[in-house]
Image 1 (cartoon, helix red, strand yellow):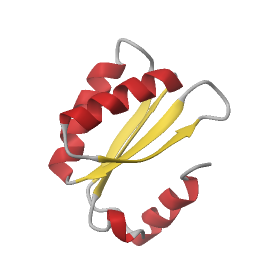
Image 2 (tube, rainbow, N blue to C red):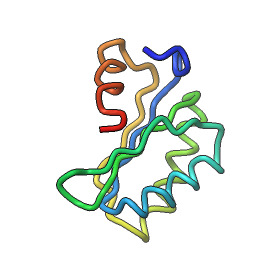
Image 3 (cartoon, helix red, strand yellow):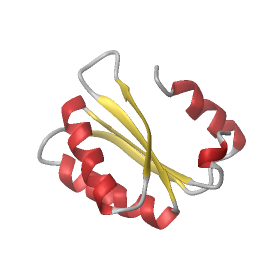
Image 4 (cartoon, rainbow, N blue to C red):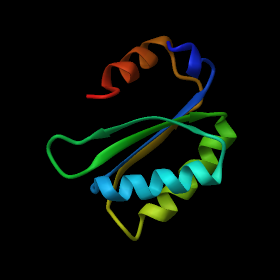
Length: 99
């Protein structure tokens, strides 16, 4: 795992609109102390997936802000928070960054 994100929770959300993802991640970053780990464009549609890292409480607050902002702009495809990702999950997460 990247030492930069060691011990951090991860929040992931996917929207049908890449543009809405940027609006939502901006809201998330302003709402709580989170780091945006990556934004991956969905190759099969115009959507994208955002990964953000921080403490569990900050990721929860950021996710709430992101989804509240995204709801009128785009369909929310999925979202989740993993409080303590396993090493295997971290490996899979790294594999998708910048793809």
